[in-house]
Amino acid sequence: MQVFHNPLHGGHVGRHEMFRGKLVPCHETPDRLDHVLAELRRRQVGTLVTPGEPDETLLRQIHTERYLHFLATAWDEWVAQDPANAALDILPSVWPGHAFRTDVLPANFSARVGMFSFDAGTPLTAGTWAAARAGAACAVDAARAVAGGQRVAFSLSRP
Image 1 (tube, one colour):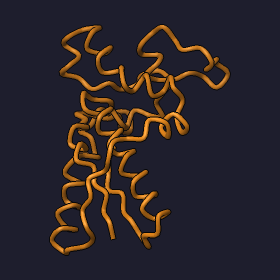
Image 2 (image 1 turned 45 degrees about the horizontal axis):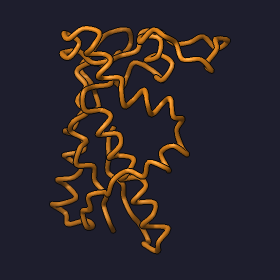
Image 3 (image 1 turned 90 degrees about the vertical axis):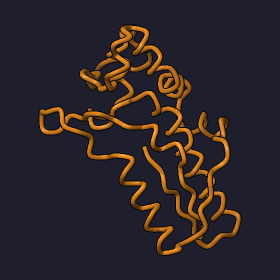
């Protein structure tokens, strides 16, 4: 079995997430993937493979251009608003109502964060975009391995 692992996953290190109305340390951490990777190595399960570059065409077939642009630029915009933001995670605090328009991007950064977020459980950090792109490459390479004849492949990635 080929195990496609994300070498950049450690760049996505959230400090806090919202859980039951409180800011708490993130439950999902790089240690979790590192533990699984160590166990796969210890048990000699599969061949570890680093993914190739993300397939930009495929990313744009799966996600909207504006979503990808938001993820690619959010951290820089966050820090440009206030350099002190570099010490903070990006977490949504507002979301569009069900009847609100989603065809027009809000001018307000916090509103855009909410538009592209599901909840406040996964912060955006300085390394999130690179880690997510490498994670997408893991998933695609694992799927292509199976489509190409491999019986099984495993994509080990986060976020």
